[in-house]
Amino acid sequence: MSTSRIDPPPTPVPQEHSPTPVTSSTSPTSLTSPASRAPRGSRTPLNLLALSHACVDVYQGAVAALVPYFIAEHHYTYAAASGIVLAASLLSSVAQPLFGALTDKWAMPWLLPVSTLLGGLGVALSGVGGIGGSYALTLAVIALSGVGVAAYHPESARVARLASRGSHTAMGWFSLGGNLGFATAPLLVSAVVATGGLRASPLLVVPALAGAALCVAAVRSLRNPAGSDGGTAAPGPVGEDDWRAFLKMSGAVICRSVVFMGLSAFVALYARERVGSGHTGELVGTAALFTLYLGGAFGTVVGGRLATRFGRVAVVRRSYLLTVPAVAGVVCVPGPLLYLFIALTSAGLYVPFSLHVTLGQDYLPHRVGTASGVTLGLTVSVGGLASPLIGAFADATSLQLALAPLIALPAVGWLLMRGLHEPAQPGTPPSPPHHSVSSL
Image (cartoon, rainbow, N blue to C red; front, side, top):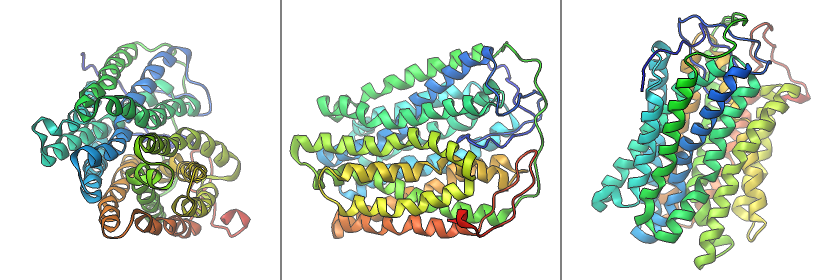
């Protein structure tokens, strides 16, 4: 594949509804108004990138979906199984800001197909114990997958931003592709592993092969993009970096991450305990995890629409507040009604997801790459670190008791967000802190 450079925009434009990181570079390119649609000639590469995003994010959701099968076939404890989730999330989260810093300086379109293949290969080998059948090798190949996923996202966001030419709608479709890939992962894992066991896991490499081909096609189609003239220059950063607000918001993101990662690792097992058992229990667990992930597609769209009307900070606050009773329902309510509370929890966790990223970019307008890397990377790793602790507590007591502390974390996130203001965006002055009803 050719490694010819694809020039990104000269400065990042904080995207009000885009849940993907936006990186900067010094190469000149013009952008249309963020509210406009992507030019017709750019839709093909953007559609290809959205599909490749779905193929890559399958592997983010696949790791948690494999946990029940690791426990059933390899007889791992809860703590050992959650360590596998940690291996994927920790390296992916820590490495993503590093790859983001690299793509801030250099365009690396060749990284897209390579990282896609790495992400798929690690998961595909995990079911057979990293070829050698040992827990250590399983952790190693899962970690390899995490690095591949981390390498993909900053560069794909840069290329997608170029293809979208600043369109919120176009970037929303790119992000939706990733959310759908995440949501369909439990169905894919169930279809492959439930029929052939973990020995069939090498079949899970198929989405990576498709995704790599889509990446190659997308980059090639962007070499001579249509409608490249006639844009307007992107506005520069607005205001000064507000590290205090950024760090408080990052603390709220950590609370959200612990809840989401904890439920990702154990909700399938918990649904088996509360709803079904035996062969039916496998389907019950898959359905629970699918419901949790499906909120990504719903929340990404709804969060942006709500933020347009009420403001991002107000929407994030209210989402956290409403998530508290939803998580309580997941922990306490037995039977099929559990799925309703999983869906409500999913929506509450995902509505603010894209808003966290754009808020971070606007709180640090001169360090957009750093803000995106921390918001999408380092803060997420804390959620992965908490998963083994939840697993160890579950081994010592019960899974229900281990999940109970998650109820309080959205309330902590709400408290952290309560004193924050809406940051300035290009063309608008910063909003002062206020204490009206929207402060909820």
